[in-house]
Length: 420
Image (cartoon, rainbow, N blue to C red; front, side, top):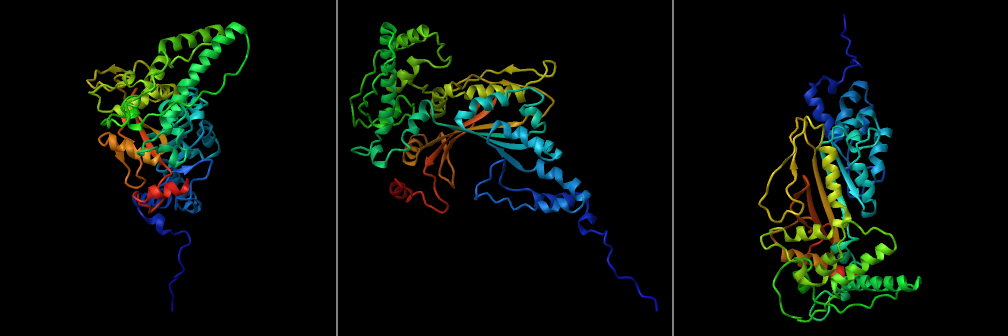
């Protein structure tokens, strides 16, 4: 009697027997992660990718069908401008299909990043390394200049140093007062050196008497809010114009060009004199506008301009920039030009991260409930995105220390005190 051969065909595959649309869904389920891939550093333990890259080794057909999904539908995070360029060399040729990347920029690396992001060289540029880019998020850590510098000085201070009698933060105005006195001492020392030709180091500046944080926030920070009248005295700065003239003479004698974006009358006066930095009452984004004014030296505007020129500009025959007028009085850099092009424009967003003590962050949030949005998980605060030279920019306030998973914000104050 004839018997049928029941042996399975070794070349048969249930996966490959599915329609291509269903196979692509299987590939995406197996290879796409909710968390970004860090390169070359290792991602935090909290990021679990749970991808099955072994699927790529099934056979040539599965590899050719799925490799593009691995790169095009995942997000990749780089922390140095050379990482993205090197990654394209060491990774598969399919990495040309990367569409979404994150850049974490430290303040000391900002100039390197600005040069890379604005480069139009064929061998090293963002547009050449990621020709199919659709989404770019830049996380910029601020805190060494201007307003974030004052916040940064509070991170290492004990809790008791931030609250004096009545619970008013003291370290922030002290830090700003010391900056002002340091500039004054530098100007005086420069004048003496010009006369005697010596190289004596000026003594450290004396600490300035503190004023309440809320009083300081109403003026130099532009935070607004009611005045409680708890302190009515204020230390007046030296004559700002005289100090600026002394600094200019120092630069001329030493043949040093002063920084192009630093204006001593604006910064010193606004830090100490509340009248020198009043925000427009019609401005609904006073906190964000004040942050940008203090952060001009950091290079945020240069970063936005380079990104706009590198990603949104092209030949003059195919691009038409129209300067649209805007009635928003809070616009810091004016209305950005709008580019018209047949090519899809990548989505570019910059998040300026400022680390401050959580208790001070909560004060700022209380003063600006309409401008700041609170994250439901971390309880950090972020402004809404605003256009700066055509690039979406926002400021994020990260409370230090961050909340732990499952920790309630109500008992975080006690945890914060114990850790310090």
